[in-house]
Length: 625
Ligand code: NFS
Ligand code: SF4
Image 1 (cartoon, protein in one colour):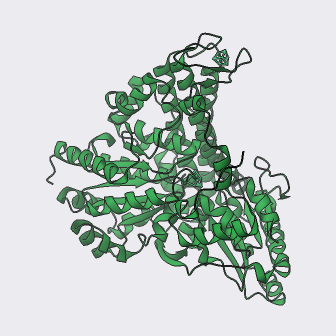
Image 2 (cartoon, rainbow, N blue to C red; image 1 turned 90 degrees about the horizontal axis):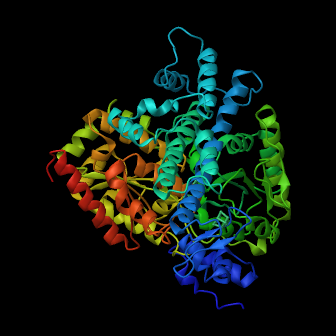
Image 3 (tube, rainbow, N blue to C red; image 1 turned 90 degrees about the vertical axis):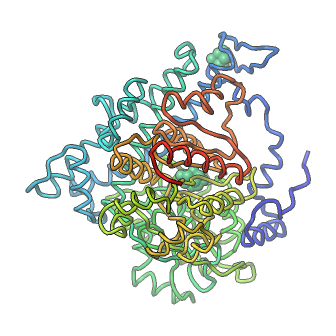
């Protein structure tokens, strides 16, 4: 039975979103919010994590009344298995993305492409040194080949540990070794998680959870880190720059092409092709003043960080961007792309173009994008967008706002350079209490939560307390739209942050990249811990994902906790059906890895929890308040 839709006012904090939701309803276009209304209430067993479909003796649902599945698995086992597979899904997403970058590096090394090249030789050599590859006097391509072989091997099972564990403080590694939590190979841990959760394998919930953590660590310190580092090598290390965000970046007088997904391999080429004089001339012939490439979600973040492209929106803006009626094409790679975008595109002149065999959408125009033919294919794609401009219905165009300014491009290299070449000034600012601590706010939108209400609120509450905030993923656009990503935002910060950020001319909330780029935050934490000669869990730091929805976000949360970082979630994963698993997540892990999750829907309270934690950690380090 169809229910009354929720009032638009309750769906988002943003005017651009609300204007487009109104337009969607007026034009009879269904959005994610309408579908959520129809899916609610959800299945209670699934919410608790107590359903199992791992074999055909089932499916089973367990409860107090009926506590065992057909095979005898209880709620603890079923919940742990489900969560383990959930995390493996996320680790697979990030890591397979990382592997695609190794394959581009391979194409470069083998001379199969001239469209991609090694842009950052210094970074390549620095990484090589970190993973034990000789660089002195060797030609770049030889070093690159060894790096490629080394990272391919990180995915397999011949190694004792993934290469970037060289960055991890020794105390932390020893802790992992004691727990059998050292990530050996990315594919290995993911495959082993699938194996363990087959009927009749790992039937000890805490043991399954430990392996879930190991799988997540293989993502954070393996697949994701490789993805970030090789993207920097190939496309450039991000440096601070200004850009703009919200639906106002879509321009009525231009051909608008949105890039969406996660991997910069396709979208970097699209951006380059959009500067092709012939295509620009054709756009002008059709009456446009230019070609505008704007970003959505994490592909957007990747190009924003490195190339400064404007950001049209985050997860819950993806359907709404098309509803402006001014988008000629949306080009996607993979992950977080709602299949509904094909239908919404179909309501307009918008061409929906997919580019990866592993992420095809029925009804899309498909390109099997390859490094060898990248530029040629990118030109064809941009040409499709340009030609679509002629089909735009000007009467249906509504771009609801003016864009806001944002500052982006904070890689660890950029931060270190801004500090004069080392992290020492940051360590001193933390020691002096000007920066009391730092929290990474990461992750998504979820239509169950008023869009960006929690993402923005938590950032605002933390900076007031002189806690530096680093944002990645879909939180970046939220922070940007709220005016937190510009140097002027120090007005909303406490006195210490105001002083430090003011002196450096940077915002109190730093855009640190895409979700894969959470690896940058891990690296920063490891570097700080090494500088202070302590464990990561001794640092006054935290992580949060207030509006998370995806398997990837769960993997990120778990690798943060397993790395020793106290981690907040705005709502729980589907684990509450097991007391054992829930207790482990919110308290038991403290004894094992020195950090836990905490679940809190109220952002003022969540900020207070971080405050308390940071106080405790500062005290233990002998730092003043
Ligand atoms: Ni992260 Fe990026 Fe956004 Fe969430 Fe999806 S785009 S990888 S998963 S929704 S932050
Ligand atoms: Fe049921 Fe056990 Fe099969 Fe799961 S593995 S569906 S609990 S019988």
